Length: 265
Image 1: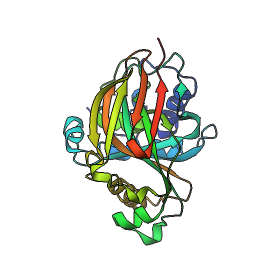
Image 2: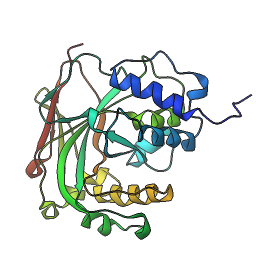
Image 3: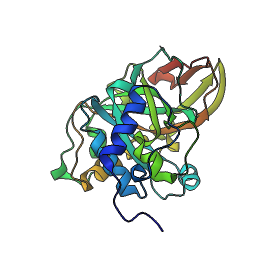
Image 4: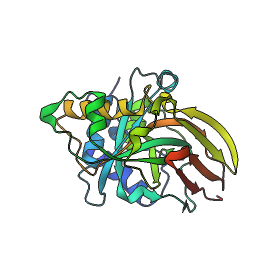
């Protein structure tokens, strides 16, 4: 018989946050900490937002194309928080302890220059675009904090930072509107070799759609985006497996590049 009580969101958040901060992989998590629905997973996320050892800086959007949604068994994207403790500048070299279930994604990321208040929802793509201060080439390192992937379904990933291990950004541009984002090419480079090429159309047909989608989803939960928030809009390429010790470059052409080096163990 399934669990009848709600997930213990406080306990689940504490366990997962500790695993992230200590860079530890868990064998499992207590049954009362396992989110059994998207609602329970989001409750855990919202507890994390108030954790005293974490500093909220923005959001990631995930599952931003049909292929990834079908693989995950869902019909829309997902989202999760980004915390300053796991944000790195381009060129970062990771130490040992990467997640065992992980991959690399090249992402268009933005910093907002103005609020998207709850009172003005729902938002259109153009309203979301108008809130952007700068656009950045970025890398998301994905992974869950478990030694082997537990049978937790999509809620299990959502509750665990929505699968975010780390976020790597490079310098941004304020005049990003000169780019045709749906057709803007992105190269995913591993050890000097182009592994994958794609375009911004891979991200909800246009990365700008991620911003209004996120703003509207948060508004439905009584939350809002603020000036200064990061939004990583979703995978333009990836997730692609993370080879041990690899040099990773997300090449966004004229927009710039972001890079990192993965650990050798």
